[in-house]
Length: 176
Image (cartoon, rainbow, N blue to C red; front, side):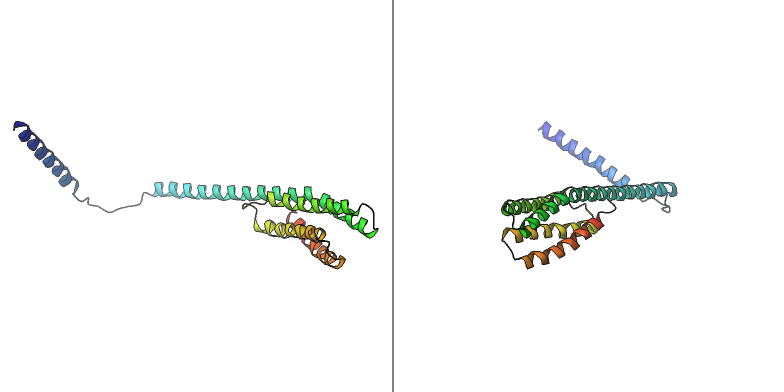
């Protein structure tokens, strides 16, 4: 029984001490709250600095992404256009190697589109990504036309759009 009495006494003592702490901590503090101006300026400066750094980092990532996709455009465009023009020349002259040249043109056009697509990512700014996506789609459309043996009129109609969109893509990449 002594154990129970000791445990009860210990619990009562703990409750009294805890109650004393609670009562001591419940007093209100008098005075007027004031802003520590030096700490406020330091905090404001840190927030601005962090914001500027984040903005600068985003701008650098966007410029790097635009440079990468524009490099892909420059690297892939000429081989695709050259292969397409070789096919057109073979078609105009009814050359015996027309089919292999058509196949090479389709492969080069799709390869250029895939290279641009691989380099496009969410960091590329819209003023670059939109014209490059349009041009990528036109590369694929032109390859599709060749693949399905579209009429000369269809191909010629697509070439006009293709050339305008190619120029727009290169214009968008001028700064990169």
